[in-house]
View: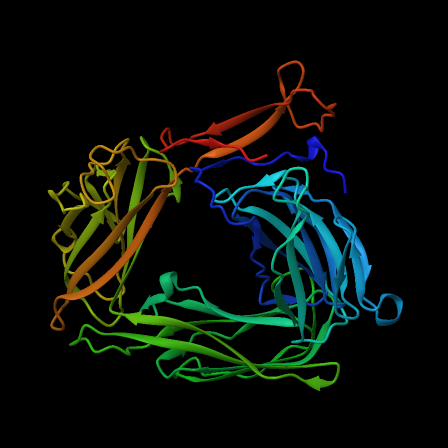
Length: 531
């Protein structure tokens, strides 16, 4: 394989170089495919390569895989990598040996396995440089046996070893072996309850959904869903079924008494590109499972047992579940965006629900706002169709300059009866600099790209004629927009181009490196370009 200059186009990383050790160059990879993948469908994963020792030259990968896997190809930094299918190991045809044509070395393998090489378009690899990550993709044969594991072996190689001219010969790293299991279907159970919590009572319903995702193409038969509802759960309405053929509710819980068993069957289901080939959903709520005299919560499991047949054979039963916590008071904190920059204003919202079975005569919220964010407004409470204003409370800071505000919601609204729903919101401004002056953050240090700014809420409430000083909490965060880096070739006119340019030996090649910093600040900018 001839490595041309035009192939040495790589990404740019921001990091500090380190001195290389004197040990021999050694290519090192991590080979971690997914634990399982669907039959007949493609899956991809990353293989990072690093160097240990002196500089290594001409990296590439040997990929050897099971006969039930098809190697679809590889990419490096978003571009297709040059891959060559060398052949298949065969006892009769080649004595289970094939030649690696890049370094003219014999490679032994398992009969039926296939051997390919994958080029990494980088000239050299140094210690403490960025990971050189190749994304590889495979497909499991549509006739593969469910639950069988298929091997993938990856070996890193330096074509030219530890010199640019290959004087000392190639260097072959250690083979990393792994396997991926053929999956016929996947079953999940999920509740719609926010933060997997729900205030008790019929005012606060959630939907429990059992989903079967079948591999594209195969048909599974005799599907059986069995969900045994906890005695604290009220089945609110008839279940709905989407997908599958010949589906029916064989038995279902009462909508007037708690607990019970939901049995649903389907004659068959064929895998499609949808992740929801069969869905069974039903609404539920919690009854009065909590003691008003105690600051209690109850975690209740929604279990599923699932049975199915394939090609006339019954498969092993699988189980799935989701857990939702019943509470007197449930609070979920959120921010209006997940990513922002200094100078922007954010809205923080605490969504609050009060159980149907209690009243709350004291609700005090304690919000903690990270250094780098400034609390900047009064507090707005929306409740019962009315809006209440809480004048901006005094704040305090801790040793890490986190700002804490405390305010009494019921002083504004009065006692909150059972079934109450309210939202409490305020705005904060992202600062250009931290106050800092504590471990890890210097005084007046800038708020920089990829920083995470956190918010947390801890409420204390009293149940009327019941438990007192009960606690409930939540949290949220926002990330500062990250940097974006790019690298381009510069053509003869001084313009950047994505075209593949041709050069003759001795010609100069110009690259242009660019960094965009949406947040306006970042630390320790160093461009290190690896060719």
